[in-house]
Length: 458
Image (cartoon, rainbow, N blue to C red; front, side, top):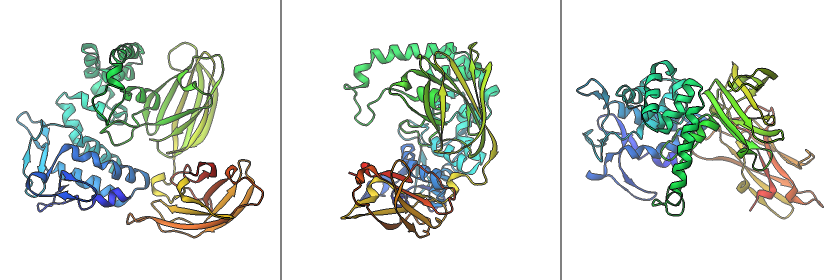
């Protein structure tokens, strides 16, 4: 919220009525807006990560308008080139609306914001920058989208030949990954990972202690994220999170012993294909992220023939699934388990349109015989009356207090209430938890910020 508020004087309408970045040289205390500094650059758009995440989290109107507005300003400069393909300028002058190629031209960083604007509004005009580049045979730009854009946009048939051709002609990892998506043939992944193992082994020093950049010391993981998470959760300069799920395994090292593929990932359907390489049943908690909230049908089965389709069904169940909500799954020993998830009924409200109470470890202050808890209202709607509860891991309650209803942080100003609870005598306080909730158990944006163990306090 603080970052979005600080960006308000930086991303504004210019004299032509287009929203652009007023400067490419600014920090926390100083900004230059004179001549050479008032050019909007492609890399200006990376700072939209904060408004994108805030809009995604609680539909904040200021954040959403900032993202859609600056993309609208960019689209206002789109025009066809000599071949008829739609093009965008690389740099735009805030004061005059002048355009130039800048440092190289054609940088695709703004496409992240354009995709976010599409996601926030469902307006297909925001897809034009992406699709225009694909129409010019720049299929590599799809790799810069964290979601499974091929299935989200229903482009399998249209893009199939191009990706298969690229995968055959070059060792491009993303094209090979997409070729597996399109065909189901895991040989594409075998070739992809054989090359990846070879390349990473050969460049290990450069990818670790010998790396020449101090802000990105890493080995490439985006294909692994797509395979195991159904999209990319985090990659430098790619700001709209696309992962469908995340995983937490019950046993140490089990994540490295269960091979996972997420197939056909969209916000309304995905399939988990997992081979457990161990002799023991492995349990995991799967947390949903980029999904539509509602009732889902989960069908689990065993694939004994290697066709990524269950030949014997183990369970079928209806469950609630939404962003940040977890469900437990099991993977059977030395076999492939397939779990198909499909939305059956959309929820009446999506998480980003709800109230939300939240606490963190730094919101709890230990006093002589009590604790003070700073409770935050973080949602899109005003919070209902609530309660703070001091409890142990068995659910025994030792103290409780009421939380008054609180306004939503609509003006990007924190809305908080400080609530005091008495600590029980003769009880080790570090064994206790603090939990906040609304009295009527109304749905919230997320429940993962509602409980804090006192042992987490610094």
